[in-house]
Image (cartoon, rainbow, N blue to C red; front, side, top):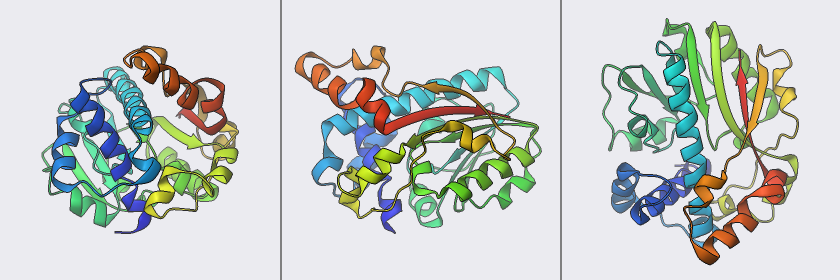
Length: 260
């Protein structure tokens, strides 16, 4: 398993950690997988503050996904770079086709814990390789790109969006990004360094991804909304807000919504 693939254990740990505490995100599958297969984390990647952040980010993605599924009940849901995430379970997708996409080594690991079904498929593919889209007949896609864009060069990311645009009449897409500043800072200080990743990419202007891709920018979302921060108590709440909320967080991380 390469170093980028190892990053999937960082959010898995975060979701298992908060689920065990009974806050932010209920994720029994993350608890199960972490208990059986938890990759040994060290340093900042095992921080409880990062765990809270990862869980809040996932909760925001979950709620957006549920909203879009209700708006577009005939859409296919594509979770690109799924890792070991159990979003398909958390949002109860069963009435719609859900496709989890990741590297072959990741999907191989994933199949130890998930089983394919009529409306659930696991696709072994680099997320930038989109040949599998040719077999889909749905006109609308709901696309989730969480914790992935920072590992994809800009040209490849734009090509991915263009492929998605060319494959569907309508697309709803939510994607988190590092800023350029965060990408540069990551070379010195980032939890992903603890699993061997040093090369990441940042994006400041969301409009860049609209150029010749068929997408338009919709909105920037908050990854650590106040109602989730309020699930923390006392000094933890105060420290977390300083680390992962407000202007400091916006300088490092962005959550962009697009549509076609």
